[in-house]
Image 1: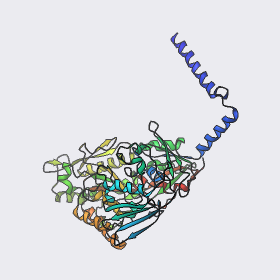
Image 2 (image 1 turned 120 degrees about the horizontal axis):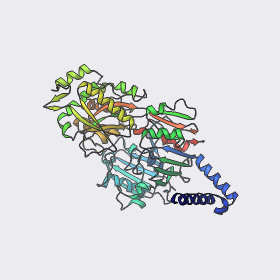
Image 3 (image 1 turned 180 degrees about the vertical axis):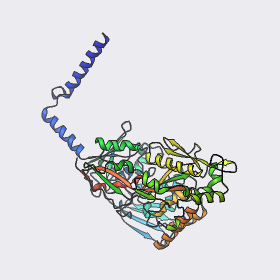
Image 4 (image 1 turned 90 degrees about the vertical axis):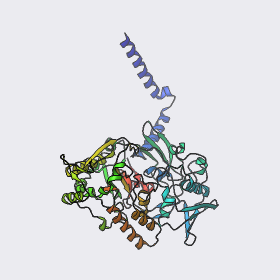
Length: 531
C-alpha cells in the first residue's frame, strides 16, 4: 500500500512539473518562450567556460597566481605581448632620477564596476595598504619596500617617491588597484570583498557559486579600452587535473591548462586545439630550512642533484614538453647563465661527494651521518598528478642512490606539520627581481626560510642597478651563487599546455607565461568564440 501511495505522489509531482513547463501553465505565450530560448542560446554561444583552478579569494594583493584578478582589476601599468610594462590606468608617467619619484597622470572617466569614479585616492589607498598595513598576509610586500610615500595632488595625479632606485618598480605598478570606497576600514585579509570583487578591468564579477564551483563574469561594457568580444566568462574552480580533461571531452569546458600527459590526448582531435605556450614555470623540491633536519644537513641539498636523472623525468612525466632546470631564472631575459649548470646526472660523482660530506651507507643501503639516516619528507598536493609523478620518480631515484625521500600526499600544504619541504613551483617571467621575494633573507615570499648572504647581496644590487648589461652580469652571478648553495633541488621547466575547443580563436603565444601557466588571458579582449 505504501508503494502505491508513493507512486501516486511521484506521478503527481511529474505531472505538476510538466504543467509548469508549458506556456499555458506558466502564463507565458509562445512568442515570449521563443524570445527566452533565443536569448539563452545567444548567451551560451558567446560564453567562455574556463576550467581553471581552485580559488579562495579574488584580490590582486592576496592572490598572485590567478587569472581572474588580471581581467577584473587594472594597474597603473600592464604588460604588453613581450612582457614589458606599458601604461594602463595611467595615461602617462614621468620619472625624476634625482628625486627617485614617479609621477603618474591617470585616465579620466574611468569607473569602478559599481559605477563609482576611479580617482587617485584609490591608488594612494592601494599602495598604503601594501606598504603600511602590518597585518597584511601577502607574499608580495617586499616588492614595494622601496616606496617611501604615495600622494595625490589632485584626482588624476599620483606621486610615488622611492627611498632608492628600483629597476623593477614599473613591473610592480602592474598590480591591480583596489577601491578605497569599498575597503577602507576593512581587514583586507578577511574582507567579503575578496569573494565579491569590484575592479576597473575588462570583466566584472557577477556571481560565485561556491557549491557548484563556478565564478561568473561579464564583460565591462564601459571598459576604457577595447571591450572584449566574448560576453561572459564562467570560471570553474577545479583542483583535480583529470577532471579538467574530462570537462573538455564532455563539452563542459571550452579551455583548460592541462598537464602534458592529458594535453597529448587532444592533439589528434579535430574538435580541439592544442595551444602551447612557453612558460618560466619550474618544479623542484623546496626544502624547509627552518626544520631541524635541514638546519643540520643543508650542506647536502645540492649534492642530491647528481642522483636525479632529470631528463628522464622530462621525457616521461612531461612527454618531452619542457626541459631540465638548473636556475630559478633560467627562462628570464637576464638569466640562463650556463656556468650555473653544475650538477650533471652522475651517480659516481654523487657517491664521492656524499663521502666527502661524511655520509656512509648503512646495511640497508641508506646513507647515515652522525647516526641519523638521510631521510626527509616532501609534501605534495594529492590532486596535482604531474607533481605527484615527479616526486615519486625522484624518490625512487634517490632511494636507489641511498637517500630516503618520503613523499607525503596532502590536500593542502601544511607549513606547521613539520614536513621537511614540498614539491615547489614558481616563475620569474618578467623582471628577474621577481626572485627577490622568494630568495632574500626574511623577504615576504620566502616561505622556506632560505638565507644566503651572497644571494642577498646580488639580488639587492640587481634591484638597484639601472644598466641592463650590468644587471645581466649580476643575475648571472646570482644563478651561480644559488646553484652552489641551493634551497631547492630544481628538476624541470614546463611548457604551458593549453587545450581549447576549435571555435576559440585569438590566443596569443607571444608572451612567456608564469607559474601554473598564468597569463593566458593577457589579450582576452581580442578572443572570439564560435560554438
